[in-house]
Length: 176
Image (cartoon, rainbow, N blue to C red; front, side):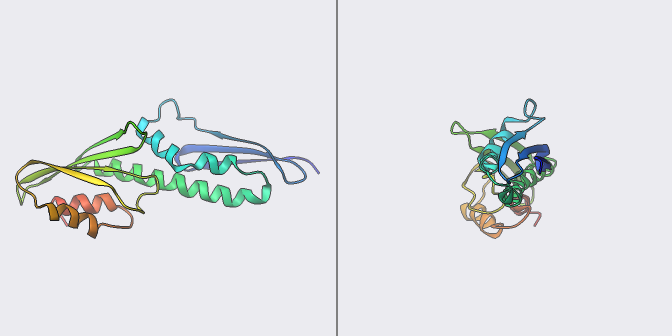
């Protein structure tokens, strides 16, 4: 029996390479991000929060590799999905991405509702597991009047599923 190598390309352009001994032990594992030097700080924060590297580096046996690769791919896939949604959302609304002092990814979306004559900034912490989970958010009315309940109701109605932020923004913009 000889040692074997495993190489996988994962979501977000991440590479995973491992060496497996004839006995099935993972003797080395390496995660490579060729875009790390140019990847936006926001993107890096989401990827770090996902914990995908810990999932992969914790693998000690070849039999554990498939489950670890699936979990890491799921986590990176969620990050990739959020980044894609934010790119599309930024075509309709001013969208700012940032990282808090604690390293959490944050987004602010400026939403204009022409029919109701208001503009509101909605700021939220976005977890790597988006669109699942609670979105901690706040809002600031830039002009006009918007009911407090209208913002909360939009978050409740857009509480789960793909393109969650897009649906919330559309509702607040009067497009839903």
